[in-house]
Amino acid sequence: MTTYQFPDGFLWGAAASATQTEGAADVDGKAKNIWDYWFEIEPERFHEGVGPQETSTFYKNFQADIERMKAIHLNSFRPSISWSRLLPDGTNVNQQAVDFYNQMFDELLAHGVEPIVNLYHFDMPMHFQEKGGWESREVVEAFNHYAQTAFDLFGDRVKKWTTFNEPIVPVEMGYLNDFHYPCVVDMKRAVAVAFHSMLASAKAVQSYHQAGLHGEIGIILNLTPSYPRSHSKGDMEAAKIADLFFNRSFLDPSVLGAYPSELVELLRKYELLPTIEAGDLEIIQQHTVDFLGVNYYQPRRVKERETPIQTEAILPENFFEPYIWPERRMNPYRGWEIYEKGLYDIAIHIKENYGNIPWYVAENGMGVENEERFIDDSGMVQDDYRIEFYKEHLKWLHKGMEEGSNCFGYHVWTFMDNWSWLNAYKNRYGLYRVDLRTQKRYVKQSGKWLGQVAQQNGFE
Ligand code: BG6
Image (cartoon, rainbow, N blue to C red; front, side, top):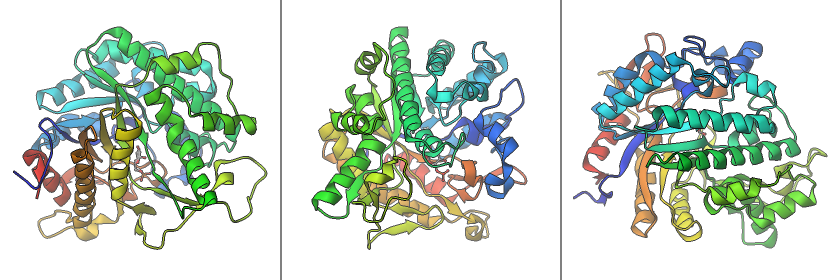
């Protein structure tokens, strides 16, 4: 027995996404997604001008990469399917994509690595973006067609599906902050995008359940616990509103089947409610997820608004502002606070307020710049900082589970160094280092460590 022992069958693995790992962005019939297009028109916005065309070459090297997963005893892996590869025109199936995903899933299963397959990871096909992206109901229906196609093609073998990864991110980054294409800053449009993503998720859940495939379907949310500066009324209210916007806007409808009434009231007050058609709320109510994936990197610390609001537009920041906790520890490369106990707080929150739904840690990780400086004589990155990061999070997760939280797995971000959107290859997260010149992979110390943990199902 190890000191921190996890239950039998616990999933140990890593997550990735199509755009960030497959490469082969414009071969074998794949259509452009918003990242391919945006890089074409504004390459200067991407770190060192590196775009999504050849990200980590998983499309080419997936067989050897899956062997590498096995070599470090991972028993699960979460890839995403590229919508624009599977259905380049939105309707017709691309056989080359089917072959690739078939081979990938078969290879994973042959190696005892369970696939948890995600349908949408920030990668809107460009032709659907031109129709309005998630602002358009037509795209909601198109997503349902894509989901049904994926279930039909791969649902005999893939037994765990997720509809979206972090649906709040395209809302926040694409429609509130000018960080992702289409670089809009407009709260009303952001709310419509959020609502339609939620509706699309519920419809995909419905389609999956109707298909009778004897598996499970969930959604992956990045939960950022909102900690107030103090217990003052203003700070508490600020934390509550941040939580409503950034966590409960997807968590409540996905798991409980309804939006929080405080959120609805707030949006109504500022005339931000989306257009809701007859039957929409019933679909959301009736088709909740079977399980939850939680991405956890950092908490959100807030205080009541003290400085004047910079713009006349209504934005979430009008209701709170960031608070710098004097004791915070930072990952300086990513600018994110490291707060391991947040994972325990999430575990208990899910247990107490979300019916103790089965859930797993779908991403947890630490991006570090210039990791070559930690390569030792044998060629291995000695990333003790990352081992420490995983270990401390796992201790808190373990405590949450001992207290009854229903967690069934722990996935790190990510399996091998991959392309981080605007940051391209600036910060590395992988269990394996990728040498971009040769595309060779080298296990890092943290990869070996996590492998031992997976093998022993725990650690000292
Ligand atoms: C998650 C995403 O938000 O964090 C990943 O699901 C992303 O796609 C990861 O890569 C790390 O963030 P970043 O911006 O450093 O790549």
